[in-house]
Structures are given as structure tokens and as C-alpha cells.
Length: 324
Image (tube, rainbow, N blue to C red):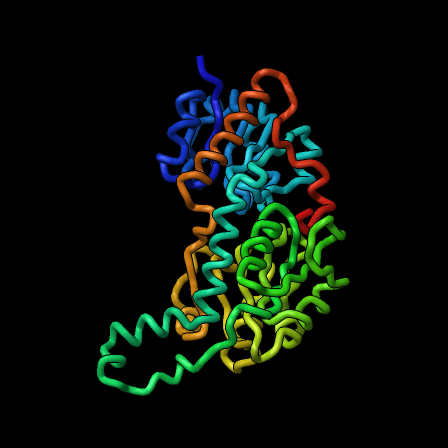
């Protein structure tokens, strides 16, 4: 009989199909497991699959008395109460770097779209204003990429791929992270210094308590009126109210956002701004990324049920707010 695995977050069934070929999946569809399954059905569940950003508190773990592992689909694990898991002897796994290339591609896409005014340009053509020779104030000549200073906050797998991509556009690349790395890019000693130095700030840190709202009004002020911010990390890293204010009063020039403080993000002041490019948290959403993430999930579950350590275990995560 296949091992039982609870699917805690709401996932499209297609994402779980390969995993379901190897394990018996119980789909909670984002609801508290005890509302969907009986205590008897949950009693034998030893592993859980979750999206890293989905809040997973101690109370949810306690619904599964035999739970031994929480396996995150994706690189993130910020929604998991790691201390609660550790105190219960539950190991946590994830899918490190599985979607790094796709997320890096999205970061560059957002940077190019917002700095080159892609959406206003698209609207200008579609509206007929171009053919009618009407003025296009939103399409004033922007700065190009050669010589542009791009600051990357976080130099993990995703940050490194972003750096290599933007460097190919003849930009200067600088970064700030928890520690220096052996990379051919300038290291800045603080986030404040990075924001002061760059004209595009790309957020690529791992979310956690230490990075909550770390990009605040002060950081945005240092970025300046010609500066842009791109976020492909987690919405919690930016103080969204401060960002809306900075975009509205032109404290910064614009933003490219794939993540938001609350998701899915409903129409509001942010969505009404013309100097923002918005995408629905699809940075890692490619066929190749999903296959790689599923491979990591399967490898972790296979190891667990074989009595071995998880292949991709989260270690010391409570102390690591910034991606290594």
C-alpha cells in the first residue's frame, strides 16, 4: 500500500500528478485537515506537502500525530513554523534552486518592462494614439542598460542567476547579502548602502522575520526618483504601503512586482498606477521548474519512507533570513 501524504496547500491537481503516482495523496485543498478528513484518516499520515509561503502553524501539525516531515513544493519555507516543527521532531524539506532560472528570468523581464515603459508603450499602440500622432508623455526617453547600476539584495541561487543575466546587459552589478561570496560583483556593506548605490534594486532574499518590511520608506528614499525596485522574493519584504506612497509621489520611478503582501492581490491603489508592472506570482511557473520541484519533493519523500535523511532538508533556517 502506498504511503499516505497530506497535500496541505491548494495545488492544481496537475502539479501533484507525478507525486500521486508514487504516494497516496490526501488533498486538503488549503483547508484545515481536520475539516476534510477524519482523525482516523489523518492518524497514519507521516508526511505533508505544502507551498512554502502558506502559513503552517503548530496547530496544523498537531492534527497529524504521526507527522515526521513537512516537504515544501518550491524553495521557500517561510510559512512553516520551524521552531514548532523542530520541537515536535518534524523535519522540513524544500526544493532548493529548482526554479532559480525561471525566477531570475522573471526578474529581468520585470526590470526591462518597467524601465523601458513596456506597458504604456503597448497601450499607446493599442489605443490608436500612435497612429493618430497623439503625444505620449509616459514614453519619454528612459536610461538604457549600459552602465546602469543594478543592486541585488540576496546572493543565493536566484540572486546569482539574476546577476549573470543583468551583467550581460552591460550593467554594473552590486549586491548585499548576509555574507560576502566569491562572485565577480561589488559587495555593499548594507541594504542602505546598496539602495544608495543602485538605480534598480532587485529583491532576491529568503523571506523571514528579519526581512519583514526591511525595504521600507527609508530604503525607497535612498533609491531615489530615478530608481526602480523589482521583487521576485516575497511580498513581505517590502512595506507595501510605503511602496504605494513612493510610487504615487514619485519618490521612486517605478516597480516590477511578482509578489505581494497579500495574495492573490485584489485591485487597489497599487494596481491603478501606471509606473508599475504586476504579475501574479508566476516567476517559477515554467514546465521545467515544476518538473524540478516535483523531483525534489519525490526525492525527499522517498528518503523519508526509506528511513533516510531528507535529500533537501532545511537546516538552521531559523537563523538564516537572507539567502546564502
